[in-house]
Amino acid sequence: MKSVYQFINDKTEKRKKLFCVLIDPDKFDEKVIFEANKYKVDLFFVGGSEVKKSDFDQVIRFIKKNSGIPLVIFPGSTEQVSAKADALLFLSLLSGRDAEFLIGKQTAAALKIKKSKIETIPTGYILINGGKKSSTEKVTGSASISAKNEQLVVSTALAGEMLGKKIIYLEAGSGAKYPIPLSLIRKVKKQVSVSLAVGGGIDSAKKAERILKAGADLIVVGNAIENNLLLIKEISSLSILI
Image 1 (cartoon, helix red, strand yellow):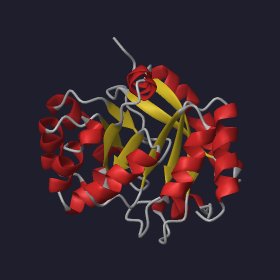
Image 2 (image 1 turned 120 degrees about the vertical axis):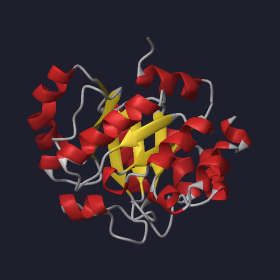
Image 3 (image 1 turned 60 degrees about the horizontal axis):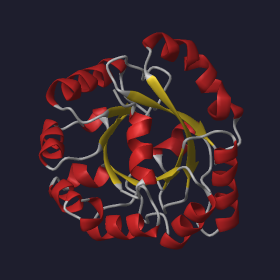
């Protein structure tokens, strides 16, 4: 059976784009799963920074029971590990300089993750200022990088690839006022050869299309879908995703 990373990488190499729906267990709506099934979303990311373990496990079980879409844990804490998921983003917060989120939390969870036998995908996570303080910034105390500081963002993404990250994830934050600028996406994509994920502030199909055309291999949409379920159909219907 093909791994989740192989699934993502195969599409990236063929220049095909992916649409990922981000599920926050604190705001879980079962209808999102059935809409995603209907319109053949590529991936689910599941996680949140303030989620109870019981709620997290319950959402994982529901999705696996009701969908064949690959489920990837997007961990908000070391407790968010489940053998029932298909993969886990093994995140390093590259935009910060706090060793706790570069290697500390990862060290604390490593044995638990290995025991679960879940696939891990090394991911360089880079917070970009989206005009609103993100939950990740609040929890970690790490500042985001200004989108205007393009050289720092590009260098950080490139360093992440050199460190062995298989995905670079540019994140403007949940409910961001502004998505990642298209010019920044283009510059990052020009320098890195691994898959590029972009999330935060994508609240319309038009924005999703522009971001994908700018170079994102995978878009991650969560908060906007919570407010507008039709967005799943609208984004899935984009010609660039078909």
